[in-house]
Length: 253
Image 1 (cartoon, rainbow, N blue to C red):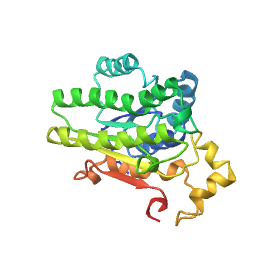
Image 2 (tube, helix red, strand yellow):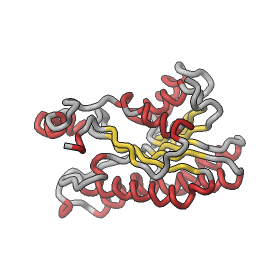
Image 3 (cartoon, one colour):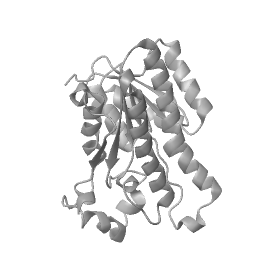
Image 4 (cartoon, one colour):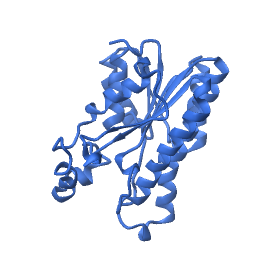
């Protein structure tokens, strides 16, 4: 306990699922946490729940991470409070198209890339600019997916955006390592979240994961959070440019 004491963390998509559990874990480790999500009602509910974990250590911001202006305003808020984010979790994600790539609309394609790739890049750049100017260090964690490690028919745009996120992780780690900024990725397997509900609640689709994975099941969001704590903390001080797969062994068989 206390491995993140004194750290200022921002978690996008932090109001439910994996993001919410990462926020909870970070608070338990002593961090000050801001959760960001698009809907204000979701932000308010998450803050109320998390404040019970660590009173006064959590705040929330409504922010659409696919909107560069909204992200800029979010970081201007940190500037106004005299805070520098030194732990960033790019967790917000979307998957608006389930089907063949031939049928995806331009709007769905643009939305997928805006939220899953462009948003993490812009948020990471905001963090890096401020950390470098202050002479501090930081840890950036990009939440990718096992679908970013191989082809994913019927979820092509989502998989491509997550694969690009792995590449972004490696590039930023190489460019920013000398400035004391570590950049890593998490690649969860099937986790019971709203985004994965179509798979979790479909017997045939779910079996493609649970029958193949040595663990024989899908994960709960709280099982992903400890990996994020590891990557955020000094326990991983010599780890950067890495993608940590948390999938119950699904990708190795």
